Image (cartoon, rainbow, N blue to C red; front, side):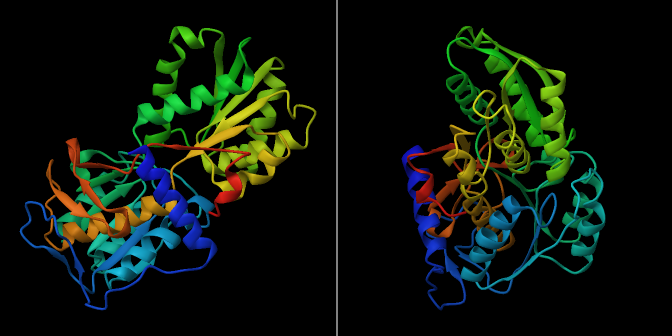
Length: 351
């Protein structure tokens, strides 16, 4: 799976750099040779597929939605749209869900700001005929049809703790977490898993002293990173499991006296983090390919809306260039393992 994921990341990144588009069969539908329990073997053309990220104008979601989801929708001849709030607040997505439902969206792909706040609206949208796919951040299983998981919480936690440990070195020390919003389902799951990971003997010299929230806002995340240093003068490292947070923390550390002394890792995109890797602020960070995540979410939603699958455990469907996927427990589809970016490979990627 890891080899497959790395190959997909490289292939997608090269495609972006050449501004290439996926080839189209011209048939108006996308064949699926491994249909699930739904009975149909093809994706319908003309599906309305709407992406609702945590917030618009966020580089991460611009990549996942517009460079991933949109590409997939164009491949199976659907109609793509993206809409959402400018701020990642718990209740901000509700009105957008209601509007998309009223507009007759066939598929709503949403990254939940809060697992509870949008449940009612999603249930109503499903009642009105929309298929609901969550990606990046889940809601309650009963409120959606599928969750496209970028990687397991355990896998994401493991890589981030290992990277901060490697960066700090054998002497260890105090570390802190700079997260997104306090209610973000994915962030909280990863943080809990990181705490579990930090309890292992090999990380006994690392001490988690604080967790702060930048609300996926650049300036607030910058200020929270600054505040961590004022509050914890002996801090040795920061983990930021959010693309906005890690970029803001990188900007702060790179221009401060803490550059090279306080280590930073987390989840970021290569284009955001390249400068900080090259100037020594960051040794390594991790992520999946967000474009692949959006691409997979679009194909999963289309497979549901076309009757290729029903979203039951064991259902199989083909997601274009990414190949075949199987629905797992609780309606979860796993993209793959996180990938580590560092100085010797970061120039290979452009997203």
